[in-house]
Image 1 (cartoon, rainbow, N blue to C red):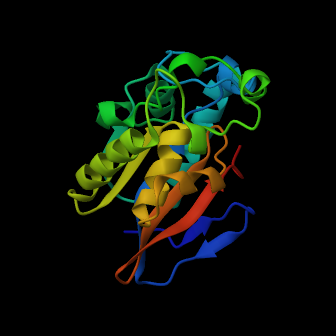
Image 2 (cartoon, rainbow, N blue to C red; image 1 turned 90 degrees about the vertical axis):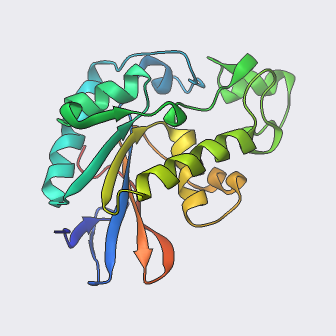
Amino acid sequence: MYAQNLVSQSGQPVQLPGDLAPELLLVRHGQTAWSREGKHTGLTDVPLDPEGRRQAASVGRHLRSLGIELTKVLASPLSRAAETCRIAGFGDAMEPIADLAEWDYGAYEGRTTDQIRESRPGWSLWRDGVPSGEGIDDVARRADMVISYATASKGSVVIFAHAHILRVLAVRWISLAPHNGRSLALGPASTSILGHEHETTTILSWNDRSYL
């Protein structure tokens, strides 16, 4: 039922013992014009660019190569995530989940970190938040809701969403405070796998882009 030849961030195979099974497969959407330029893209519905669509097809081939039996396919309702899901070949099973939308960046929507730091030197999303936007605890509550819903299916679930919500979801999976997501880089069209080792929640692989 579960593939034993997963791939790590280094591109090397990860051999999973029999008691390790993937439960949540996280997919960040493919590249957009804004992600290419480093702009904070929250609720603005920016579509995939041509490279992002190519990446989405590669994601689909990679996920199928894992041979994992999926019980649910969840996706952010924003088009860049939903389109990644469809191009990857999972559109027929896709279930849009509002809680998987990206962090609402408020007044900082569409701005790069360097632009924000011109008026707020040393600014960090994880520490300082955003004016007129969503707080980190609000994002964490949404991530917790997604985890609860996904794990109720008692099987492997693939989730197509966005960098910051997925980083928060990953650290909540391993019972860390949401600000620890700052330590987990996540590139466009990357895949990551969350699971268990015995009773302990674990990150089995992270930010794999070896198939692109």
